[in-house]
Length: 161
Image 1 (tube, rainbow, N blue to C red):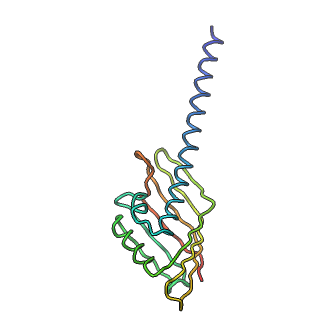
Image 2 (cartoon, helix red, strand yellow):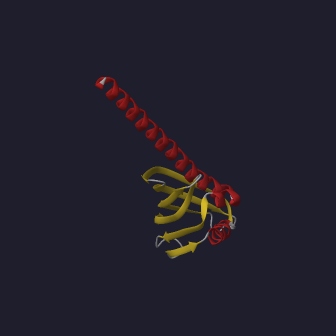
Image 3 (cartoon, one colour):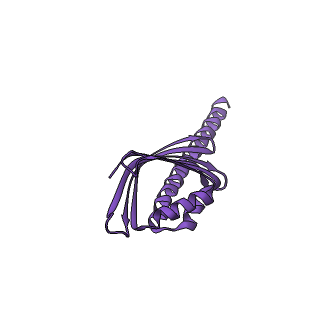
């Protein structure tokens, strides 16, 4: 009787642990999809898609290296200010390519922090300024309600040309 009880408890524990691991893997894939959709939204200038990835009260900070337009930092609070900045920034481009890699995801309940490496190249309409490439990384905070949403997004540029 004791053995059966222990076997049942052990089986339940193993199944519960397996389900938790499956959920974490599913969440990892969803978070990676969000970051990939972020790059896609920028590269295709799909502003409805961009909007859908962020919470309404998102906080965004970009720190440019000193080689990029004299460096500096910009901050935004709220999805409308953020999307307006992106639209204006991409207005003078004919194309861009955002390559993301090495996503490191740390979970804390229904929150996640993602560090993602970045190489972004923008090709300009003005032929006098052919292109700009920025290297850096994103620190992105997400919260899961029904879906994962970006609540805080930071770009740190480590170099550009």
